[in-house]
Length: 160
Image (cartoon, rainbow, N blue to C red):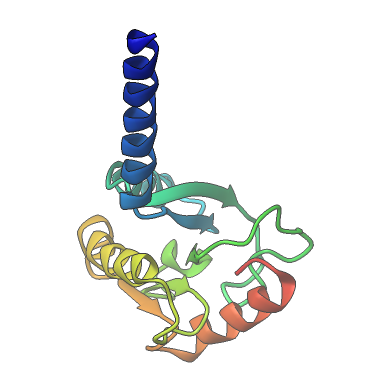
């Protein structure tokens, strides 16, 4: 009988320990990479960005390749979201022909209600962007109208 109580106590302790550990791990940030580029060089850079971002352990990563006529076309037109993302990074077509020197980081408005993990993820993406795409600015919704415009569209459609 005593061994049964000891066994039960051990099981309860381990269950509590696992639950506490699960609560200590911050939730990962849902990230969607939208690649409009077509050159081998930029496609490889996108792959490196995805790989390094995933290795940080901060992101739950998804990616899609889209074909647009202009860098300023709706990047996900005609598609429906399967989930809402915390961050969407658009790598615009203009990177291929040097008509653009920005990558757009789309989020809901950055304010005090934003999860700290998402704010950290945005900082990580800015840093990774400088390393993987030297000379290209990773621009978020606080820095330029275009990311804010696309973010507003994607929020309305359920992507963000």
